Amino acid sequence: MSLCAKSLRAKGLSPFAAVAALAVLAGPAVAQEVTGTWLRDTGASKVRLAKCGEAVCGTISWLKDTSGPAKIGQRIFYDMTPTGAGKWGGSAFNPEDGKTYSGTMTLSGDTLTTAGCVMGGLICRSVKWSRSN
Image (cartoon, rainbow, N blue to C red; front, side):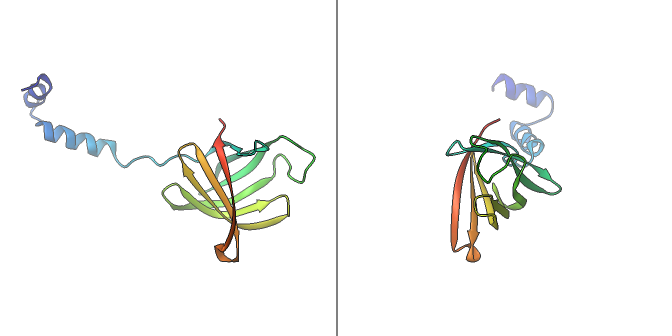
């Protein structure tokens, strides 16, 4: 019998009970956190995602070229609420055409994929972001 098992038995716990207790204490896995600063795959901009009430919103925090239609401080993601593990849905504003679209965000590790869709999701344009904080 191992020293650890002897110690557990001395305390009145079987190894199985100790493992079960640890599993209960650990609780459910913590979801990945989407908040923070994200760099667009083209390197042209950064967006800061933060809680806004019960949702997540995104604001442009840096632009490589400040002469275009996008402006620092402009909100481009609105009311993104969880729709599943690592997924959010809400609205996405495109400064290039001045339109707001149905938007989604999908987080996988340090990669965030955002998409703006029209026609009920039939036509979507996605952008990849990497964590920048």
